[in-house]
Every structure is written in C-alpha cells, then in structure tokens.
Image 1 (cartoon, rainbow, N blue to C red):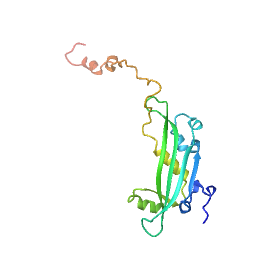
Image 2 (image 1 turned 30 degrees about the horizontal axis):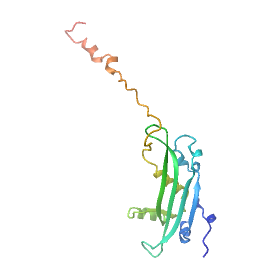
Image 3 (image 1 turned 135 degrees about the vertical axis):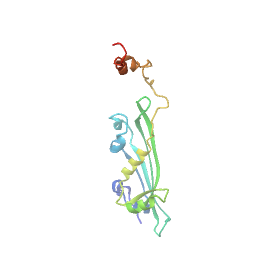
Image 4 (image 1 turned 90 degrees about the vertical axis):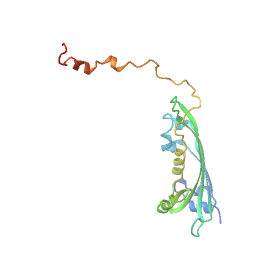
Length: 189
C-alpha cells in the first residue's frame, strides 16, 4: 500500500483515520495572522506581522483498541511559537513561548465523544464531521497562554501612583448632619 503524500492531507477537513492508518506525518508553518483568535490576544495591532509562524507537526498512529475489535485512531500534535503578549506589570510587550504537546484519540462522532468524555483521561475528537486541525492547533495554543504574562524584570521602571496622600473627602464636603444640628430644639440658630 502506498503512503499518501503530504499534499493529499487537508488539515482543514482532516481524514484522521486514513492518516493514522498510513502512519502519516504532516509538518507545517502557519502565520499568526491566520490564527485570528490567537491574534486578538497579542500585544499591539501589528503584532502578527513581525512574529514568526506557528511551527507544528501531526503524527498519526493506530493503537490496540480500548473496546471493540477496531484499532483506535490517535494523533500527536506538537507546536511552538513565540508571541508578544501584554506584560501585566508594565503593560509593554513580553515575548512568550507557547508550546503544545498533545495526544488525541478519535471516536466515531460527537455523540460518542460526549459519551466517553467523562470516563477517559485522554482528549477525544470526532472522526465525523472531519475536524479542522488548524482550528485544533489554535485552540491548543490559546490554552497554553499564561494566565498572567509578565517580564521577569520589566525593561522600564514600572510607573507608580503618586505617593501623595489623597485628600480626605470629609474635609472638602460639609457634613450634612451638621446642618440638621442647627434645627435641634433648644439650640440657638
């Protein structure tokens, strides 16, 4: 049996079963501008233009079945890219390396994935409808973004709030109860 060539694999409508049966390997580079949801989290409006592409690899394999007689379809996704995020301390750009190293087991459809999801440790994807592996790549990169991106040491001193104490609000406004005290019986007006 001839192994399909790289050109025959469409990552946008990915035939994971055939890819795994062929023990396929697919490598690619995807510009950050094509990963629009990820681009929304980057520092600055033109951040995608100056940065490197997301470099990724997909490897397929068949494994002995967990249940039934058919072997299970597995894909291994690895990816890396360095993206400019906003430092939560100085608000400047901080380059953050994002790494993905994830295995997926494929099941027949979305209903099977939902049914098995609670009882298994691995990530499940459906064979049908055929998945968009570039969408899966973007999902995994988004999940690898740190919760609080920060420089270890910010390149510029972090501006602090003016250390002068704020004026006391009571010093500036008259006390409304002081006005009522003038109306108290027996007090001179």
